[in-house]
Amino acid sequence: MKTIIKSNPIISFFVLTFVFTWSFWGLTYVLHLSAGTGYLPFLIGAAGPSLMGFAISAICGGEEEALALWNRIRIWRVGLAWYLVALFFPAVIALSAIGLSAVLSSTTPDFSLLAKQWFLIPFALLFSMVLGGPLEEEFGWRGFALVQLQKRHTALTASLVIGIMWGLWHLPAFLIPWSSQHNLPVIVFLLHDIALSVIFTWIFNNTSGSVLLVMLAHAAFNLSITILPVLPSTAGSELPLLIAVGLLYLFALIVLVVFRPKTLMRK
Image (cartoon, rainbow, N blue to C red):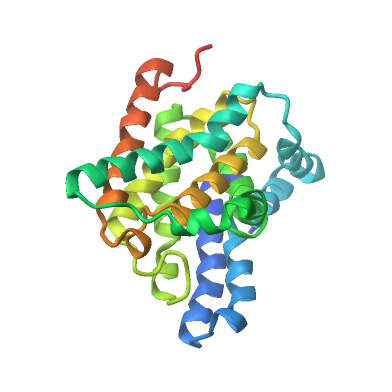
């Protein structure tokens, strides 16, 4: 088993991540576990990417390699501009989508949730980072898989591969009634992950491979579409979400033109 993993680390990562996560999420679905009883196995399953990233790093390079992966969260001296991008760009995308949707549909957005709970945003961001996906996923998707893929492929190719796998990895969550993916359009969500993967690669590569900055961006995106009326459940239609995904692709295209597909970096 170790020989196979060492020979094919990236394929092993994807296979083991899917098997691990889908086992826990499948159990949650088959047993019809409620949010209360199913949250823990769901959370454990969600940690599949990061856990497999550390496990395969340890198998391939020992304790030193696993520690190097962990240390990517300690890369924080990356310049104020990248913190601003990670924390506020998601909100810009969401608000732009809401505004365009309001103009096109002649409707008034409902910001009541934000108005009532704006003071909880810092705590919600921290919760999202730790228990909402970023910590459970980003050591694997970006910290491990992206680094491995970019050894042989361009940044764009690596981003597209991870984006597709990232989106497909979420599929069982659409079957669980209380998950954040339930009732979302599957194809739109998959397209969203692909575009977001390019943007996250851009952030990761330009911050010396900082998992921390990607986690912040991931958490900020999750939070923005939750507290702002972007999702169909809060917006009343799919239009804001569709526009938001379109804006993500537009920005990803600009990044590719300006920073070049090979590295998504100026240097």
